[in-house]
Image (cartoon, rainbow, N blue to C red; front, side, top):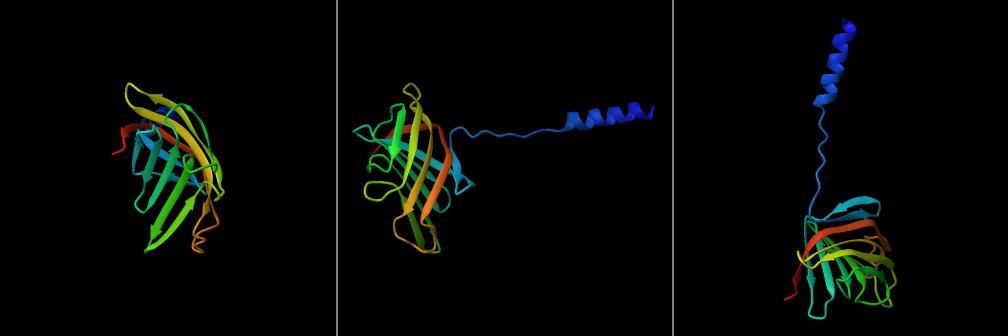
Length: 159
């Protein structure tokens, strides 16, 4: 009898466990220097020439990703300003600026996996190493983003 009661308690305990998994739709997130980073706000815009700009925000940080197009494809970073990643953080009036680009260095990729013209949304991935362009001693020389994802972001026309 004790075995049956123990079995019922075990079954009840396991069946009452709930795994809460939430998915953000849309979202921008990744690993910044091996720590989870997640935007609380974001926007994606396309300019008159078709260039895409994604801006993702936390309370005191801004991540900006730029590609010359919203078309599906791989965009290598560090070659020019139309394909770049920039990360700015400000704390107590001190600003740290990390970027990739021409004559700056840094590297990485932005991959646009899908652009849905019917809904006007874009999704993809990113990774990059950006340089501390102000040589601010409060930050490291290099900022690393890995496993970055932007998902289902509504694209609007730039003003």
